[in-house]
Image (cartoon, rainbow, N blue to C red; front, top):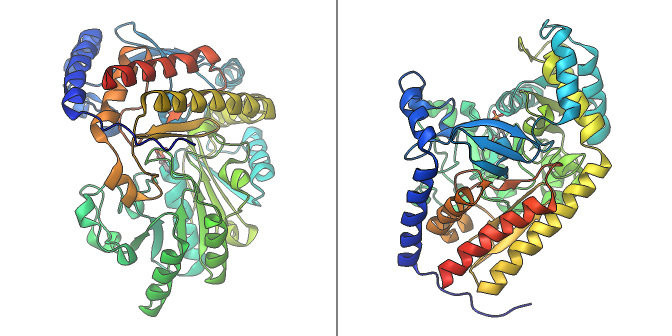
Length: 461
Ligand SMILES: Cc1ncc(COP(=O)(O)O)c(C=O)c1O
């Protein structure tokens, strides 16, 4: 292992390159600029979701096929954004196109369950080893309903999450995410801080955040909450955090969390909206070998259509079956989404597909790591099947505190600009990782590594 001290990045140079690359991207995206001027007259901020906003204007896309997308200016790009990690199947995957087209002709919505919904539940049960499932339309619906089920099952109101983790936009989980570092408070007693406005304090206070990769801190907080008469109903967490780049669980951490939540009678929910179906056939649950009491899925599940799912043990899901909790939704189990999910599970996300993703992961991780070593950059590469990132930090990120303290924001933003100007469509924002698809090729990976190499060379020249 190299023991060289990494170079100190010159922030004046980063600023210069950022200016140059921003101007270049502006030039390449004039049709997006025009679309933005039009869109903002009717769509708030010119976008359908605030996560699609960008200064000075968002990039508007037109088509996607396989591993490639086109923007409204006609730029052709390898897609490493993949719809915030949803399109592990690749765009317009033939198996999904066929299933959805056939379903389209047979009727698209009944608010009655179709056989595809049953097949999807059977396959998820097989992959996750959880007894009972419900079908929803997004990750946010999955997490908010899972929490309500856990609250009903335990008869408690307080919930626990990991500081810095994102679980969608329902108010109970819009707490303690991207907040100012100096407001997070003492590690043993993190503050409950709303993520944006419109969330009543009464809701925020019911959500308690603890640091990732620290089972001791979690248990001590649980014991204190119990003494205050507000023991949590559940711990909702990602087994590997996927919104601070990628932060993997340290050895033994998930096992300890599993053991302590069981001992304290707290429902353990793995939010697998990002990890599920992207890092293994049975998600983080299979990959790390720790089975939670409940699981939430979305993103990759629908293969490009809005679909989500909640899995749970028979005992917990009984509160749904006996009608104590109303787990409902007009579009739940929508036939189009279920046709896509069925084709995706049975025909696309096969063992062979995961072998392909793992091979691509090895190529991108070793390629990026070689660049880091060649130019002696302060950073490292993390990859796990379809997901991964380069983390620009001289020390390992293990939780939100180390992320906030060490992450190099300007260089991460510069990396995004380099990608966009060299035919790599990447998720904007330093917290995001790449998502590979089964239709990515070694050529796509090499293009990503080449863009990174060019940045590293110019940065250190
Ligand atoms: C871990 C996790 N949970 C839940 C969600 C919410 O999913 P959706 O945007 O489909 O509501 C997200 C979205 O990024 C997520 O990353």
